[in-house]
Image (tube, rainbow, N blue to C red; front, top):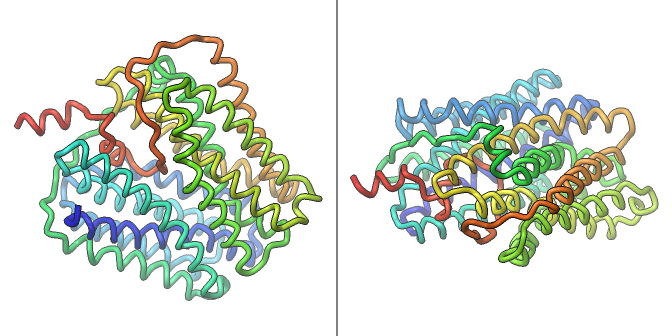
Length: 412
């Protein structure tokens, strides 16, 4: 495990910068007079770039190698970050966010491919858990960094760029052998829906909810009166809820029909979101922080629940391809969500965001409740695993998704 320390340090620096940048853009965009609709399109650009990078990064890594691919994508991300304060325009920021998304998915793919080089499935599973813990911790630290500087200056963009550059140091100097980057198969959306309808719909709708969460929740925080350090603290509280509550919520569902858990999570998260939209509640800041903590814990668990539900039912040969396709479905939702939610906030104010969340989550609860009438026999129950959406390479770290790709490596 010690030999992977350099990679984990690199991803920690990278995600700290990414967590800082997401909230910084929302705050700085508001200061520059960008409308909520414009910020929604800007934030959608990141997920669109992430989607594009999922296809473009693996061929580039195979062609030039892991170290050079990491340096290439890190340079691309650094340039994009530094251009933000020089190009104070929503359309420009939208383009830069697309570039940032492409760059970051390339960086994640390099690191996750290296982590996958661990041949022991048990150790690889532990690496996956540690990797996800580093993900959440780094995103939280990124919110704290925003409290150390002025979002209105270029300094915080410089700090973000420095963190991305610093991530190159441990990763490009590692002595680990560069592994192959296998082509991760994917199931067609229609087949995936036929095999796991609830998981497919839950992945898409959770993306619709999580995309605006990252990009527009800081705008909502400013809209209800939080200023200065209050905005990053609000985001930190939501992320902390997601980090702390995911595991206990998921463990409760182990051994049971996860559709019941998904329905309950959706209803509870929708109820919390509706409370956050009420003006009398918004005036009680301590209560708002408690509510956003609970909301983060509930909504962060939706995508892992969808993955776990799918793992319960798909045949073993379809697990990795199913997870990869589920990730893309989630990504499409995450790309569309900020644009839709931003438009609603622009026309109806800050309370439109939690009401949007409530509407999306209610749809998920309704669909899951209807599907509960269909009894299903589980093929191989899998344990719940806390996770964030990264790339298909991360899914290979899960022991449950052992694929023919790994089996061929072991035979050879």
